Length: 335
Image 1 (cartoon, helix red, strand yellow):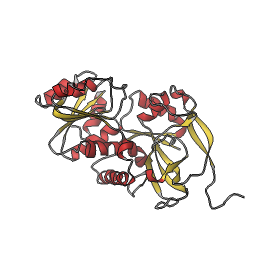
Image 2: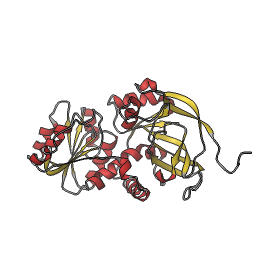
Image 3: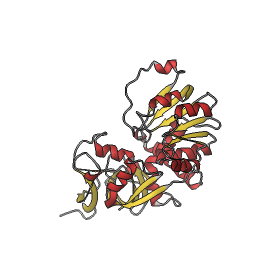
């Protein structure tokens, strides 16, 4: 006889891929979600974030261990069931997460309790789902990898993107001078409205040369680069002596190998490649980072911009929009 006190498996709708490839590989399917195991929680999703890492998983740039697999790394919802040994959370509580393994493109997901953060009043479920990966990334970029201070100049690539808009607003609130690259005049206007002091339309301007002009030849203290291959060389040449290039994405492809000694010759520069999941591996640090993020949003210093919400069944359309650089801000799926 089944133990009525323990959670049971539940049928859910989920977006899965059976092989890598284009957006057409995304399929809405009915699956059985097992009960949460020890230390895990079943979260019933109310909103699901869409991120470029999802595209990398779908295409195989970031290989996954097995297929079929449910995509998605970010979500918000309510606690529905607790696995053994979970404390500090209760059924019905609003929570959000940036997951370590895919699975959020679904009506529900089993999430390690240590990865969940409580969502405070004043933050909507859609905002929470849109800000966990992008907002926590912005938090570590400007508060930990390089602690932005008043008066310094920084360059943000993809300034009108999901992470870029948050970084621009937060850095501006900290008193920094923010330069951003964008692909179109429309995106330049969006970046300007979110704290970006100078917008460089990279499709018609040499961004490295323009940064040098804007800084009187001094260069930027730090460059935040999620683009990768196409911007790496220019990003290095934007930096002032002792400057830092933070590579946190490869939207245009992986950065090719380079001679480390070049950093010496270019002004004792530093380069780091960062991962959100390293910065949030410690549960206490995750909670602290989330509280700081929620605080700047609740204060109004940072606005979480959601460009569009789509039904879960239209996940393929969300991927096409994001992959085609047709977005600014965040895309959110509604189960």
